[in-house]
Amino acid sequence: MGEYFQPEIETMPREQLRARQLEDLKWSVKHAYDNIELYRERFDEAGASPDDIRTLEDLQRFPFVVKQDMRDAYPFGMFALGNEDVARIHASSGTTGQATVVGHSKRDLENWGDCFARGIAMVGGSAASTVQVSYGYGLFTGGLGAHSGAEAMGCTVIPTSSGNTKRQVQMMRDCKTDILACTPSYALLIADTAREMGYDPATDFAISAGIFGAEPCSENMRQEISEKLGIQYCDVYGLSEIMGPGVAMECRERGGLHIAEDQFYCEIVDPDTGEVLPDGEWGELVITTLTRECCPMIRYRTRDVTRIVSEPCPCGRTHRKIDRLRGRTDDMLIIRGVNVFPSQIEQVITAFPEIATQYQIVLSTKGPLDVIELQVETEPDYPIDEVRKLEDLKRRLQAELKSNLQVNVDVRIVEPKTIERSMGKAKRVIDLREKES
Ligand code: DLL
Image (cartoon, rainbow, N blue to C red; front, top):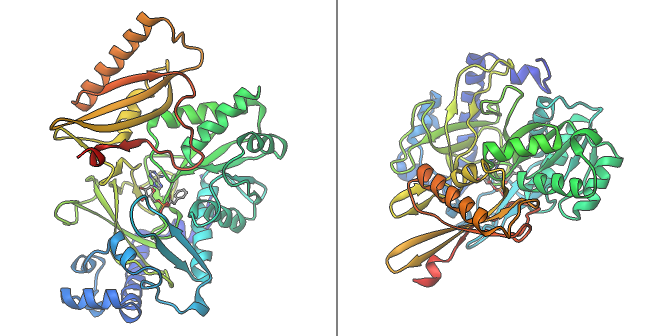
């Protein structure tokens, strides 16, 4: 299984890895305290000093930082370096409020490239591979992050960015792309577009793997993408506040994504109490950067819901894994008191072969009650004008949703290709509730 990019780091004995993490943690906490006012104030308030760190667990005495802290610090309040040492800036717009800006030193960028390159090795890539980067380039970290990983590995990079899907397919075929990097929803659109153009990517194209992330993807949707493209699917996790894509990546053995533990220290906390949970329990992922120079993050609350998988992986890598993400704490819909993640809805829909893997969830209010409507499309070859059949499909889907989610969902079946396709992160939920109240 020995396809490593940095074997000395990726297979480092755990004791040695933990010792290295501890040394780097001490440095990172002190670096943050010495150079960023927000940390200095917060640590002092909490009575926690960088000198208190003697074990990795001592980190638990330090306060969390959240996205709002970054918004408040806009633009450079959380930079530990002066402009002469900042090599690049990324930003995340967010759907609400102030943007957040994140800076990277030259070394931060090199580390980032290395992290992503490890994932390229996980899918069997090498300097001989051609990687097509169909994540958006720009302030979003997907495009440039994947790009720097492919360059670090020495691959041939095709920087198509997202959009112009037919041209993407043509490049993929003509330039013999081995590895595609984009969001799962865009991967599906690329696969469907290739088929409409008369190709079967699974047999006609050279593509062997995809590195897909930036949004949740259910097991069934993942299966569909893998089959349509005929590839190994590697799930990649990351977020702009911490780095970008490559914080954790999935090897051939699956069962979770290996965290780049030489760069990041991860904790899982109870989202309500903030208490650290033992390995294996689901909760909110909290990340601390260990080497980051420009924007050190100490206990950043990601809002992402996952758990730590600590069983040794047969691939030989010693870095622990996070499970595939369930969603975000702020994604979770509370429908009449019942917690529902959009990913659970996706899992139900994608088990129906008559229904396409495209959907939108519309939330509204009827009197005091929240109402959830699910819009789905039939597959193009489904006889949508056969009313009885359609009614039966709707009834079956509604029953399956009720039994899986324990809430009533109004289903609306629309014609093929009515729901907007995404070339980046798909927008699955439309919340009309606030506007109505
Ligand atoms: O989405 C970075 C990225 C780019 C990751 C390309 C992977 C591939 P942000 O725009 O800051 O950064 O969004 C980060 O996206 O907190 C998760 O909620 C979600 N997310 C990222 N990767 C995954 C994944 C990029 N593999 C937010 N599965 C994160 C599920 C993911 N959700």
